Image (tube, rainbow, N blue to C red):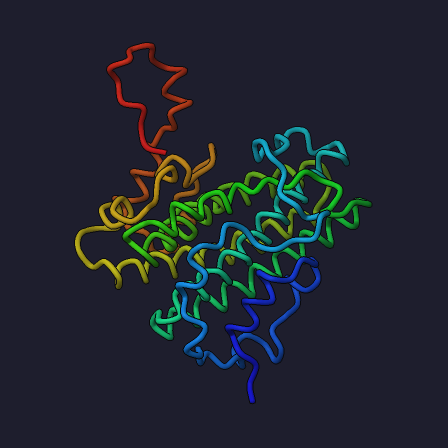
Length: 290
């Protein structure tokens, strides 16, 4: 009997050890049995607040700040950056596992797409961890922000259901990574760390496909209007347009992902409330999206 996708996802969320969370699916995700038993209904997972983790992987309070690219000449800054990126990938693995458990009645093709993305994010995490080890460090030595998991209540409670997950993960956090991966690829390269730069490029290339999956399935779930309109209907606050990018904005990657020009331009022009606060003292002006 083929292993169960349900069981694979439960291991990811219920195991505390990093190695268990990042273990490949037996036989690969393509070989997993996607049958869901009656007692595995997704409502049982709707109240989950966070995954089980061993103490060294516990979430830390505070901002999820990254070293600036210009500081990556310092080995400690490179290690801190690699740890942040590895942890982002680990949280993404966990959240895709949660989505597969929460919505067992998703279209089978979308479930297969989610399982494939989960496995690629697992590989990304391992690649960053290998580079972190090359710097003489490990994930448990760094403060691990739970920023991605802090978005779960808004996703979970959204009336948009799976569309909220697609908008939050694929079209916000992963879309932003289209920019961050290139910014830090160049930062690592300038610092002489070509191996870490190559990992960033690999992740960037895969993220284009992940963003495409999110855009295509959001169109199927919500066929009315353009990409911008359906994104705005689905994305759960406080996520929004301004959080779907970095300061360096890569139009080409977004076009390769199949995003339409309405969404690309809206993300490019979006300004965070912090940016607006620095440019106006007029309290009547809107604070912007995100």
